[in-house]
Image (tube, rainbow, N blue to C red):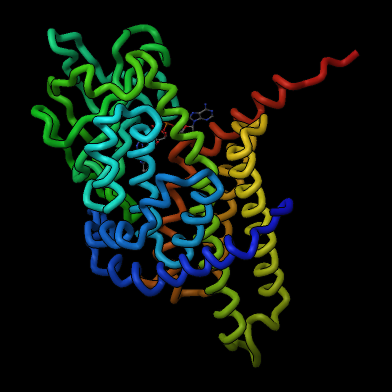
Length: 375
Ligand SMILES: Cc1cc2nc3c(=O)[nH]c(=O)nc-3n(C[C@H](O)[C@H](O)[C@H](O)COP(=O)(O)OP(=O)(O)OC[C@H]3O[C@@H](n4cnc5c(N)ncnc54)[C@H](O)[C@@H]3O)c2cc1C
């Protein structure tokens, strides 16, 4: 692969995924209930081997999967990505017993995973998390809350980050694998703008033992960060999939909709906006692929590049979808229109897995850290 084009096998795979998204997955997504886990959709992702592929993927494959599915069916993309986010801590740091119990079920789309880091008092500042793990004779008891947890409260297991050492910041956090049927664990769905299963969790003395620890006690923040480092460029890929879907729809619409005696595309004020949408989408796509390839190659500067990719792609997708709505006129705002759907979907990625402002902080920190001191 050159810098930066996909090879023919990757391009063919992306086309195949797009067709699967359109033909196999979209009909299942349409039968789902917004805000709830769609189990038939997950089972189909399992049958098609996509969840298997997800768990074995490097960052670039993950990006291609997410972008191509998002272009045809955002619900399928999100269902797949959430399985990855919730399961990667197990892949990365789970014991053989954890893997044996959960990975085949996740791969088949039978077990629903969730990643539980955020809390009402700890979002961007995740190291401030306060879910309390109090020592008990057989392990710990978890008490407190998690908030904005995708797939909660319908997930079958949660990777939960809890405070085992008070006052130690990121160094006092432990990752636990908590099955949903543990006593004391309850949850409530949250009704959000994006059509996304999400909820809050309440832990009321939930028992966990050393067998439930992912990695080592007090080393769980690293498990969370390794997971987010892998997924960050792929949030950008999800955004690009949405931007490309909006762009495709806009090219088609502006080429066929007539006004003032000709197609809208004859108006330079329109066609130049479409050109701008395409240019920014392409730039974002290249930035995402380059960040993902750098991650896979273990190159230096990955946090900065991943942050640039996530920042630029999610902000670009917001711009592209908004412009697409403008160029479609009223029909784009009708409930059920592709762009009405994308307009709701495109907003959240600028906030989760590190808000845009947090990405800028990461980029700036690395720039100043690497500054050549002036003579
Ligand atoms: C759809 C959706 C799905 C989610 N899924 C999950 C999930 O599965 N698991 C999970 O654990 N969490 C999840 N989250 C939570 C998400 O990770 C948090 O919303 C995110 O980390 C931001 O935290 P916050 O919302 O508390 O905002 P805050 O931390 O309160 O920040 C609010 C705003 O302040 C500004 N800000 C914050 N910090 C800085 C800074 N350092 N510099 C400059 N400006 C700053 C930014 O504009 C930011 O958007 C999800 C959120 C959404 C919307």
